[in-house]
Length: 481
Image (cartoon, rainbow, N blue to C red; front, side):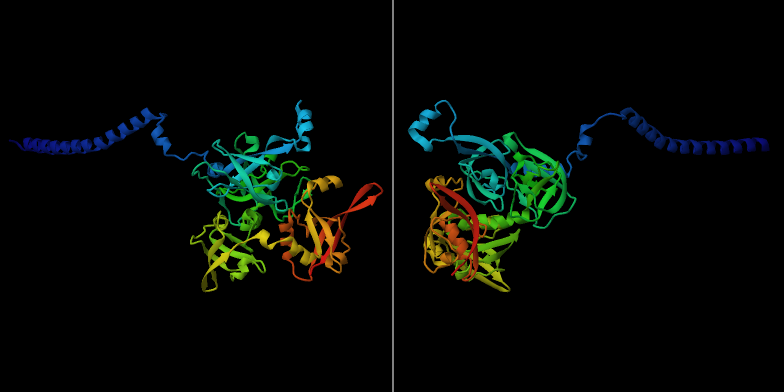
């Protein structure tokens, strides 16, 4: 073999060797390229296709904080319908009047407002003006159930009323959560809910515009401070419904629209609602049993706000500021649960576990029927006058529409009433601004005042003018003994 042949053979071998290496490298490069091309082709092929399973994992942008809060609160919102006794007006009215006279009445059904459930046993908060004249109350729940309810207590001064659903069987109800008393942010989003006219749930959204307003309701200012103002629409049928924050927590009770301005609504703040509950959700208001203690608190932090002098609570050793840990061997989660246990039917004795500083005490309180203690004799002792409830005949004789009043039937010589120039026949409309619904309520107002203190009486003074009697309004103060 010549040298040239050796060179060709060697070159051929080198050439063959390098060719095999390049093919190997190319095959290695082809595999990822082919995979990439296949992926790109798959993406192009499937571009624009809809996959429900993949999209279902994405959050629904429509279900924002407002929607979630509304879904939480809706089961607690009710419509309140009432039946009020009114004069009949059908063609047979005159016949019935001839037989029954002024005793003939008929029921007129009305759907007046809304309410909110605050306890799973069926306690409801609403405005007092919604139910104050009702003879029969019906509530319609969000799920369409209709139940009768009874008025447990309420005051026109606070415009807060407490109702109780009459359940069927062992029914339970969805209760709203309470916000902290002062947990209010100016400008935060708020939601007004109601069930107006029984047509279904109504929702409106706005912001918290103010925390300190005093709007008029029916042209009469209520004795309430720090009203909440919002631009959320509050229609008349929403009165008594809840105003909630984005957590679905109750921050107020809707009241009314300010008639002289568009788009302004008001609500009673939860702090004032809680204060009203400490008065209306009590053994005294619900069961006419005297305890003599008021409670306050938010959540499980409950304490005694005040103790009435000479009351069963004071005799048991309770003081303002004592923390309430347990009631009847149960730990209350909030003020509603505490009050519900206090007014348990058929119960005259209450067991409380309290804490004062580092001292923990168990006390037993024996409740006293109010009518056994707050008697007309107590009024006579403090006022120096005997009184009786203004009955319908006397009210009609004087031409008065008001029934909640007392008439003075006698004045003691040398007593406080004589010193204030009170006379037999004078009508007491209010004592210190509180309307005396009956003798017990009047005695409670007077009993709470110390010897030598003054009680302001709002009076109607009848003055005979020939055969007519003219009525004058007057105000006087009596120094109690």
